[in-house]
Image (cartoon, rainbow, N blue to C red; front, top):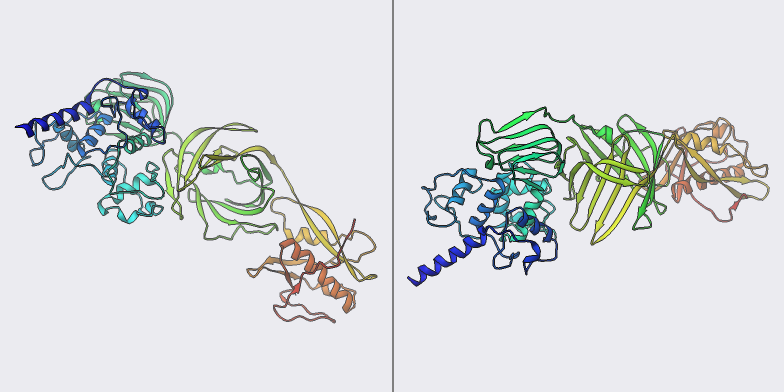
Length: 586
């Protein structure tokens, strides 16, 4: 009898803990943490999902399956109940009997065989399955879990749900792990619900303000009018046989209708917004230069110049004052793809048709909040807003915000219509580095400083002139360099390229040797003996070796090994770069 009384008291305590109607503010909880979960716990309390007990919120306590069912029912305003007659481990006198009946009706709790296990602590992966069912999330690839070192611990029956929540950006994990078998704590659950739902509308009335994030409507008599929801709209079971009216509403994400009433949703002047196109937010345009102002790091300021552009492709030169990189971006099949990233690229070469293993998707259609994808390295990239505010030195923009989540850092990029990327913010360990658009120059050119070497037959030395060479988008590099080389700085040095000399090709090979192929005019128009010809070839080696930062240069004539009346080279033979005793022309 004493044991039975104790059980009744414990059950009553749990009932009071979950259902006390008094709303408590965060400051009233003596154990409210001051960490990552604080805001989410505050929101869970204010939205009526969690309630304190004896002045405590108990953030680290686990949730049972019955408690989880109860909280999810609250969120959705669940009212309909299923029969539990087929389950043997649940008593109609228990406080949670009706809540479990609602959960079974919603199909969020299924159980196993004849058991629902209401008193068992619910694991993280079980929680993920419940919420994926509730929010109708499924179909993500298992590769979404690749970034977690314990992905193999996820049960086969939970993989689709867990992958879908990860791919959508709702699950972050901790220290590279997802901990699927651990019991979920109240704080962890509060954070998960806060990721899934940003606004609960549960008081009848007319609402006219925009919302960013997923919105839950779980009460009848709601009118949403002249507003935009940047996220999903979920109409819960609490609407019942009442009505929710959508009047001139734009919903950028999904509309999930869970209410069973036949005429519960009335739609007026509401249609899907016109689909946004990546081409509008990343215009492929040549003759442009972007200048970004950085904060937080000496290399956060940089410039981007369009070296080459073709249909749907651009090759960017990214210069932050410390290094220069080449980046090839392509618009293809509704995606903006970075096909190539090549660091330490101080030379100018058309790489539009080159790809590498680092290729990754930067943007993906449909351009809607909540769209996410997983990168090859396991990081998750997600569109969090299509109307984010991005303040820059050049002005303020409404932009598409794309967040890339890694194990230890987060990168947020903002793309504005008709401009491209206007801002990026890198955060890690409390540090923040930002780069914001300061200047956009149309019809731009880029100056490169190049040393051209010339021979002096009188003293037998090589002289070089430091020249600023101007390049525009899609200029043919070999043509510009050849013409520049034909200009002799003064009468004390001789010419290297004759009037009709052309560069057929100029490349940096994988062995870090420069290969330059000249036309036959270089040899036929040369008026030089063996010594002077040797100086000419050394000038070419120094000029193009230095341009590519290479140590050797091979010279061919019309794709054949170099040969003249004085000098012949074997196939593959190269000339070492040699700057010894060279003199600058001032």
